[in-house]
Amino acid sequence: MSTTLRNNVKPQTYTRGIIQTTFIIFLVFISFEYISSRYEILIAPDEGPICLPEKVFILDKMSFPEKDGFVMFTAKGLEPWFTDGMPVVKYLRGSPGDEIKVMERRLYINGVQRATLNDTVLEKLKVTDMELERNEVIPDNKYWVMGSLPPSLDSRYWGYITKSQIIGKAYAIF
Image (tube, rainbow, N blue to C red):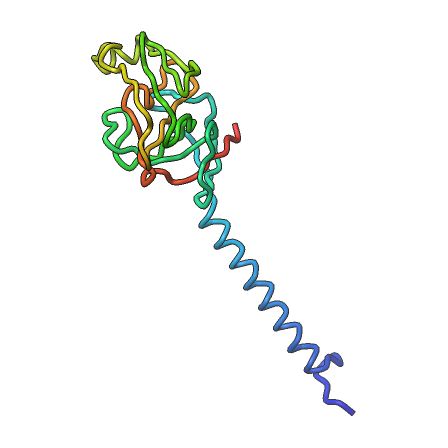
């Protein structure tokens, strides 16, 4: 006859239950660590320039954004509108090799008109539309980002962001 514990539970069954429970707890912990290191929920602040109508995003830090999708990047040299290091979400509209042309207040990407310059933004920046004119190809490791609202402060006014500024791909929730 085999040895039994109280309530007629066999030692092997008891040990197997502890091992299974420990393994499940370990899997849950590892899954949580993976998900929390890869994904983050972000809420756009109410202050600062309004660039997108969406306010809540999920950030995937391990996916690179696709053209015309949302990109999250860290601001660099965009003060006083965005402090250095602040996460910013915009649409990724241009990537290396794309042609950017700003002429007569209109923005063209690869020959397609995508936006115009905004008078309110020009006044805030104290620049003229002539100062922002350009006709160039986006260099390697540089990206063109834009908001979807007319007064969006974006690449039309400051130029490119670098690949090293990109945090990941963002998904709009609301």
